[in-house]
Amino acid sequence: MLSAGSGASNNLIRSLRAGADAMVVIGCHSDRFALAKSPADRNYLTPPIGDPAFARALRKVADSERVDLVIPDNDADVLAVSRIRRTLGTRVALPSVSMIALCQDKLALTTRLDDRGVPVARTLPVVTLEGLDDVFARLGPGQTFWCRMRNGSGSMGALPVKRPEQARAWIAYWQEMREASVTAFTVSEYLPGRDFAVQGLWKDGTLVLLKMCERLSYFGGQSAPSGSSSTPALARLLFDQRVADICVATIRALGENATGVFSIDLKENAGGVPCVTEVNAGRFCMITSLFDLTGKHNMAATFVRLALGEPVDIRHEFDVAGDHYLVRDLDTLPAILSADDVFDAITDARG
Image (cartoon, rainbow, N blue to C red; front, side, top):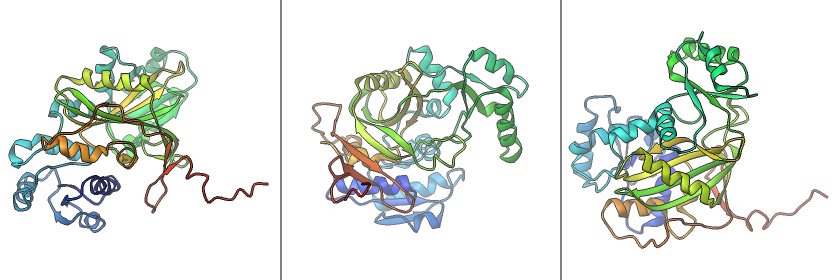
């Protein structure tokens, strides 16, 4: 059973069906229009997660459908389901509430990782608009800085800035038009290098499976103020031992006995060191298809087997699938292509 109707959940459903011959998927959502797009076998309309009736409704669906595993697919649902896991009467393979909450606060996460020696961008909180001059001075000389919100995904509230006045105007806009708090923002050093997305499965503090890709262009990046997005329009599979080591250190820094799926974003600083920018604890990333439908192991299907206590035959936790690309666009299914596919059946008319 999982949240249904969003692009992330629909991608995950396709991955699950590709990795398991017999699997019934039950979808739940508080928006009937989202459910109308769901490819789940059966779909249920539930109260929003903030409604006191949410837990009761989810338990009712789980009981009536004899659900084996609940899989939330966005940050809000992950935290809500983790909080009510003891009342669901079914399996929930999620990190602890405290670990999820830590990851969803990017400033708290950055502070924790920095204290544990994991490379991150130097980051300072915004306390007042007037104090931004001091924030920029403390960060030191640099042509560009990164202003973003402590919470949220998809580069929400993110903007590259060069001067305190730009950050001040940006935050003031969000404060007036979106009712955001000034203290919801941070300013950090800008990371100009390569951009990595990593997805890993953990069981009781042990890494089981990890795959990674490099974002080459961004979905909607051209029109976004940030110029980027956590969702790539074009990405390619790769394996970088430096990135893998940093991801392992990241999860260990969060606490012992980490369990579930963790999606980690990293970007290289000016010196080429990959720095962790975000950790999504307990949910699959939007581009999970790239990690599920390539290589030896389907990550989504492996996650289910681990959660249900079934054996998994994985000898090497780093699954390297070779040269494959993910291509995404609006209103089309994501395409996963081998390097050869990019050139097959295409006639070069460039002269």
